[in-house]
Image (cartoon, rainbow, N blue to C red; front, side, top):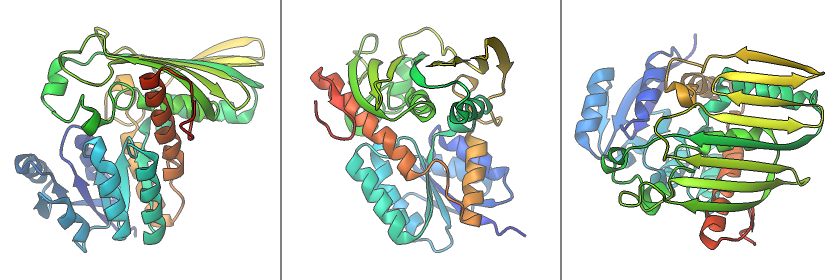
Length: 343
């Protein structure tokens, strides 16, 4: 019989609902406690899921000897500190994206993980979508030949109220950026995961529609170069009138792959095929995929068996470095080498 791990969710905002629903549907886990500095949010979540304890101070969660796994669902700027403290205390940690705002914070998390001898996972749940799994299998198989380039775009809509109702959003200090680090990060992660290591970026970031509401970008476009001079393009904006399906295209010497929402178009061996996939589990919003439930279940299986979690700190570190390079490039209007800060 599988031992049920006692889970704690720190941060009871919007994204925590996906974690709580997933945990409530799992035999491997028990929602032991929830925590939020806004007590009414913690109380509401605690009552809905009949938790044993409710906390307002995350340090009390970390020191609770009953807690086995901590889910960090707080604003971006708190991820690094909270995760490092929890890991050092011997708690397994599943952290929402982004892993951290800086490479230094991310490395501190890795150090704490290694010292604590525990698992650290990051929520890039779109990797678990059925279409994403197929795309990864095709790219890893080599059937399409040599990678030449790729592109992706995210054209969504965020209303002013989205930011006004959560003051940490839309601020460099709290969010660490705008559309790129919050909404489009999953698609950028898929692009680099499916293609190649990014070595250099040239980016433009701007605030076109929400200038009176946010201080971060609502639009970004990036030219990226891989280690063999592959060219990748990325565009994201929150200025559209709806949340359109994500688009992603990969061009190889022997064929291509194109993702449009949940449909994949494959060109290989002179033939073109189309296939429709589901988004994953029932948790989440269709336009960005809903693999949270699958990812969380896999994390707990890794904790139980000792198998390394696929979306590890090392994997998520790639995005931390890439984001730092993109924002540096956008602010300085120069090309930047990823992971070095050099122009």
